[in-house]
Amino acid sequence: MKGSAPPRATFRDVFAVPEFRALWFSEILSVTGDRLALVALTLLVYDRTGSQLLASITYAAGYLPWVIGGLFLAEVADRRPRRSVMVVCDAVRAVLVAAMLVPHAPMWALVALLFATQMFAPPFESARAAITPDILQGERYVLGTAVVQTTFLGGQVIGAAGGGVAVAFIGVRPSLGIDAATFVLSGLLIGLGTRSRPAAARPQVAGPGPLARAAEGFRLVFGDQGLRTLLLLGWLVAFYTVPEGVAPLYATKLGGGSIAIGLVLASTALSTTIVTPLFTKFVRPRLRIDLMGPLAVLTCAALVLTALRPGLAVSLVIFSVSAAFGVYQIAANTAFVVRVPNERRSQAFGIANMGVIVGQGAAFIAAGAAVKLFAPAAVIAVAGGVGAVIALMLTLRWRHVSPPGGRHAAGRRPGHAASSKSATLRESRPLRGSG
Image (cartoon, rainbow, N blue to C red; front, top):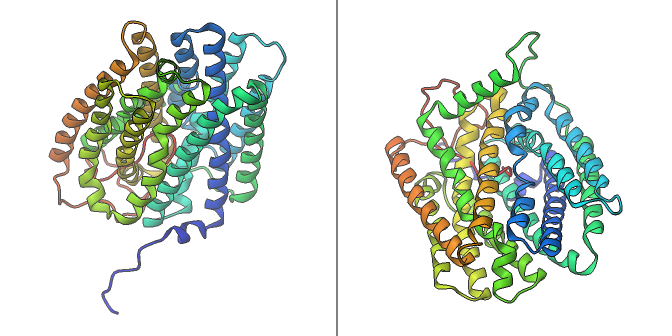
């Protein structure tokens, strides 16, 4: 009928795109294998040393390389073909993880190899996030983001729980071998399943140096008040993922072993894996934006309940509920990609993801140190309370920038945003290396 609205996109429409299917399968392989190896190494350090602080530092070693990678390597995916960047990153990571299989390798060498492996995650994730809007447009992109985010979280669940089981039954090195194989398969899927595209940015014969380009990226991301607010909302993940950083000691205090530790780690992602596609499918774009702030407050505030010192089962419920409220990140992702020009998209995602990953690493180390003085439950509760206060302040700021019921950018095609610094931001993405 004339004037009727076009039919809404479905998940079937998203999976009908062959390139997206290849990208999706590669995400499953990379995230699951990565998480399995990270958990396995963390448990190995905790088992050999008995130190929660050292275990937290090992866990953070999988995150801190995003400082360098996010600042100086992510923008490579703007100046080079994004498919090639992803394939090369997968190949290098496969070799580095395979090097961890050398018998009798000292602990410091394994942690160093983990650090080097994660250095190539920022350019890979930035390239993948930046190429997705070229493969999916409009509401298909929003649904595709939900699929990738769900896959990312599902991979964390499988990898985290599998890491605990793997250490208990097959050992650390076989787990690392699985991780190396996932990178090889991921690179093959991307290389054979996606088509070649030219670089988004024009090559520069004599352009600014790395530091100057990094500074330009920060000006792009922080120069707009709305974008800055959305970015900080995304960075709240550092507060509501603190349970991951103290999982070994938290589960041990409750009488659990390696499997219980894996369950604590998995619970932070399990409910979001279920809620994310439902939120994206049934909640309309404008309502997603209006709910973004309240959900951000709730995802942190739920952790305050750990102050009551619950048992393992109740703790898993609390962590799952908190993670479910984190679905607000989906709205943040969409607006982020809408407002950033295509030729700067990888760099912008790199900086956003860098803040998330570095914030998580710092929070894990701080929490690991804090549990030497306070109970793990108290540390988690304080982190949730502080995060909730910050989320409330950001929610008030967001309502000032984009009042409820106002005009939103949900209907714009990703990647076709105004590049002006004065442009008003209306919508956004899950800034966790997964959108």
